[in-house]
Structure formats: structure tokens, C-alpha cells
Length: 225
Image (cartoon, rainbow, N blue to C red):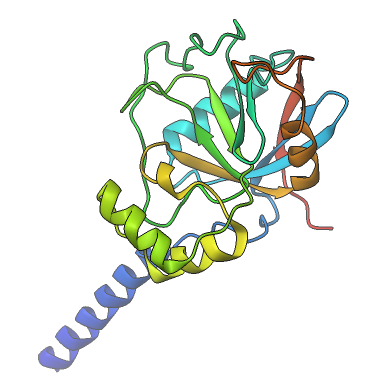
């Protein structure tokens, strides 16, 4: 009986470990009651994002708290590069300022399960562990095959999983930024709005000639349709 009980205990622990190691689904629809956000871009429409609070708790808390307190309201996407990304969250609009909800910079939060695919919501930074208030949304549509990603991985010192290779081949993104910027959210609706905002005319510094304004960011609980 003792041996049987030990076997049951081992199996139970094994199941717990397997459950705890389950991968996050970056492209799954939000679940009812899950915290999501609507990024309202003036004159363009809304982009809806879900969050990865278990994988990037500080980045999610920082963004949602700033949003709820109105920090981002009226700020601009000061750096826009079509077929790459749109970046905002700097009160000065220069790309050189902004702060976290704690005042100081905070550390990167990387996950093997999260990549800068098209539609990924990422922290902008000035190097490792320098996250503040600035963020960007990956808009890149370009896709990548296995050979290209193998070479890229060799050059950057990372190894892309088979799942990642498949996804970059399906949806595109910016694989060279993998593990360079914290991925803490994903667009689940509004990619057409993202594309329209990314297509604006910009100057030599990638700043829109006509401001692309974050009218408001609304944080709420997702309700299934």
C-alpha cells in the first residue's frame, strides 16, 4: 500500500508540473472576464489588445495602471515606420522621456512562448532593463522561412522553435527583436486600424508629419460576443 501511495504521489506531482508548464497561446481569443484594452487612435479607430500578465507581470501592471490613470491620453505615436511598428507613450513626444509607474526603470521580462509577431504589444527600451512608459505595436507583415530564421538565430544567438518558425511564416513580425523587447500583449482585433496608422507620411526621423494621437486607452474586462 505504501508503494502504491508513493506512485500516486509521484504521478500527482508530475501532472501538477505539466499543468504549470503549459504554454501560453499568443493568438488565442481573450477569455470572458480577462483584462483587455482598447487603444483609441484619433481619426483611425481602435486597436484591441489582450495581455500576458503571468509572463510579463510588471509590464502589464505598468501599462494598465498608466492607462487607467490617463497617462497615455493625448500622447502621440511619435515614431512610425510602415511595415515595422508604431511607437508611443512618451509625454514629450521625442522618444527620450517617460517613466514607469514606479518612477524607476524596470527589468525585461522574456518568455520562450512570446514573440514579436505581427500585432505584438512590446515595451520600447534604450537597452537591457530600461523599461519605462514607452511601448510599440509590431505592424510588420513580412514573413520568414526556416532557412532565414536559422541564419538569423545563428547571428543573434537565439534558437527559434518549430512553432515560432511556423508562426513567423504565417503572420510575420520582427524576429530579430526576439528577447530584445518584452512582449506583454497581442492585438486580437483592429489590425486594419494599425495598418492605416502605420501608413502615414513621416519625416526623416520617422515622426508623423501629422500627429497620430492616442485619444484614450480603455482597460476593461472582456465579454464574449
